[in-house]
Image 1 (cartoon, helix red, strand yellow):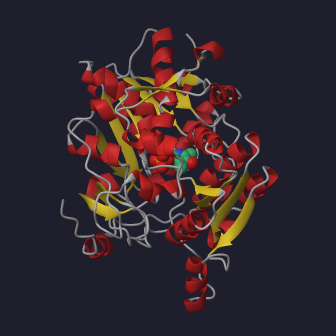
Image 2 (tube, protein in one colour):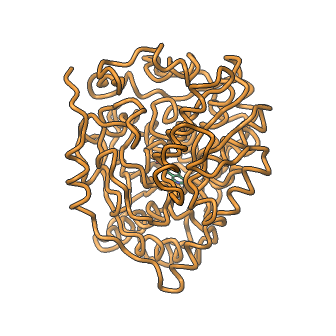
Length: 451
Ligand SMILES: *Cc1c(COP(=O)(O)O)cnc(C)c1O
C-alpha cells in the first residue's frame, strides 16, 4: 500500500490544458473600464506581453510549455501525491483520501507554477522588470523567485499591514532579490493620493494593485503580473491536475470527488480542469470549490459584470462577485479574500459543472490540526479549507457506510503562517458571520455594462 505516489521527471507534463474550447457555451467579453466597450489587445499591451494576451482567449486545447519553463519546473515538479492512510484510520472512514501537495515548491505553494511562465513570456517580449502586488506575500514571493531564476528585476507593492504581520515573507522576497515597497507608497500617483487623505493608511490589496498597475503602465521596460483569476493563470496551473490523473492511474484508482480551496480560482482550476475534461468525456467525477464563509464569492455572490479591482482601473469581467468595494473581514487565509472569482471557474459554476461550499475559519483550523497530527504537514490556512471539506466527505462516507475516493489539493504549507496557528491554539481566532449587509451594499455599485 503506497503512501507517496511519485512520478519521474520525464513524466512532467509538456503542455498545459486550456479549458476554453471545452466550456459550456461562449465566454463573455472582458470590458474596458473607461469605455465600457470590449477590451482590445492594444488596451492590454501596456501591461501584458502579447503571448499572454493570446493565451487569455486561445481556442487551442493544448498549449506547449516552453523548454526553459519545464527546466525550472523540474526543481520541484512533478509534485508528490500522498495517500492519507493515517488520517483515514483516525477518521475510521471507508473512504480513500489522497492529496496532491504543492507545498514542495521553493515558495511553498502552487503559485510559482504561473509565476515562472509569466516571467519567461515577459522576458521573451523584451521586458526586464515586473511589478506586482501582494497581500500575505505568497504571490509576491513566487514572482520574486521567478524573476531571480530568469534574471529580471521585481518590484512588489506589499499591503502595509502585511509587511508588519508577515515579516518573513518580506524577507523571503528580498532574499530572492525583489524590491518590496509597503503600499500605499509615495512612488505612485495612486499611493500619493491615498496618503494625502490618510497618512496612516494600513493599505489594501485594491490600493496595491492600483500602484503596481500604474508602475507598469508608466514604464517602458516594466510589465504587470497577476497571481490568480485570469485565464492564462488558470491555464499554467493545469500541470497540477494532469500530474494527479497520472498518479491516480499508478494506484489504479480514480476520484469520485476532487476538492480544492478557491480564492481567485487558479488553484482550484489547476487541479480540477483536467478532471473536468474527463467529466466532459462522460466520466463521473464531482469537483468541489471551497471558500471562506467570510468571503463567500461563489456561494453568496452574484454572476454579473464587475471591476477586477477597487480603484476601477482593472478590466470588467463577467464573474461571481461580492462587489469590487466589498472588503472581507481580516481572516487568516489571506489568499482567499478576493471579491471576485476567475471568469472560467464562474462560468463552470453557473453551468452546474462544479460545486461550491463555504466554511468558517475555526472549523478549518481544527481540520488542519487534525490533519497535521496524523499526516505531519502543516497546511497553509488557505489549504485548510480543502482539508475540512475532504474530512467532511470522508465522514459522510463513514455514515453512509460507502466506499469513496477523495482527492484534495494541499495548495501550500503553513510554516510561515504560524501566527495564525498561534491565534487558533490560544483560542483567539474569531469566526465572522457572513457579512450580508456589506455585501448587499457593495452589490449596489456594480458597473452598468450593456453588450
Ligand atoms: C494564494 C493561495 C491560494 C488561493 O489561490 P487562488 O488560485 O487565488 O484561488 C490557495 N492556497 C495557497 C497556499 C495560496 O497561497
